[in-house]
Length: 503
Image (cartoon, rainbow, N blue to C red):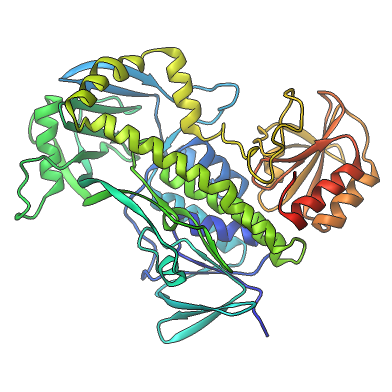
């Protein structure tokens, strides 16, 4: 008998978020990881507004905002002189959440807690070795045993065994051969709401405040004169840069919590799907950490894939819907790779003209309010839209109002019984059917949604403002359809679930 279980390989943020979303949608899921237990090092640390929004929809945000460092600005120095202050985290019409600095380990802990509450525990020391795809299931070899899965999601990082076993290429290039990182306790004379960056020629140093008293992350490319034949001591080299570039006295680093030397690569999987195998997060794309987009892009992958896979696994959608995962998410990763690679080249100043452009044009522009707003909205990932994808409306709808594929901002609504709620609180495994312009519950709308999505898989919501319209909102917060006719919504859902294309 074939398995209906979705197996997720990798218990990082992407894998855990995928499992939480699938389980919240009522699917059986297992999470396997080759490690002996949870990681306790920080690794990724930037949680952008969209990442926090995804965690909130999944019920996994917990007290992360209270335990995080909220960043108010990025201060950029050139040749020892402060040239730009870039405010971040200020509320805008679109972006209402702040950017947070928090250890990836803390994010994973909240996701594991949520997953445990949904009845699933991570299975540690279970390394995926190989896989074989059958007509209607996957046989995954883990050590000496075998796991049967209806679907397999590889969230096992840049060196993904799942990707390699599935035969999916991972082309790309290295950007920086050696990059230094250290999380330290240090008595730095810097504001705790500020990320500080120092640039001089091809030298760069960054200091990021982390939760905890006087805890900082220091980052820099390895100095050109560091000898290849000697073991690098990242914390020592970074401490030297604090003195040389930031003008701080020696001896400020009191303790080293974690240090690493790594390469920065830009790679994008040739495909996100092969049969019943999917890739997400770092298994599908890796890029420069500049801009703090990595963990957030993986969380977006997880949520996008999960609602589609849940419908297909439940027999309510054809397998063609799963092709829209790559169609929607791979362009996002491609754009992130392009922008972070360009930023890396510009910040590190690999050539004299790049340094000239950086010091005389790019850094001073960071003081301009219009540039500041564009950078903040873009980095938040809340302006992201899928309207050009197969489930988007393209040019079919008038420009006024959101189009299919656009993210719908969170807002206050009421349920059919009159109780107040927030739109995004009703998502996370479920759809929302939101009628604007007042009115009372109409059974035709509910019947159409129930027929296509299943009983209990959508929330019926109302709001008094706006012209009379009904919005069908996907579990990931993006608009699936809007209009005034239940029959038209039914036709749209048929195209989405059967054809995997709205147009």
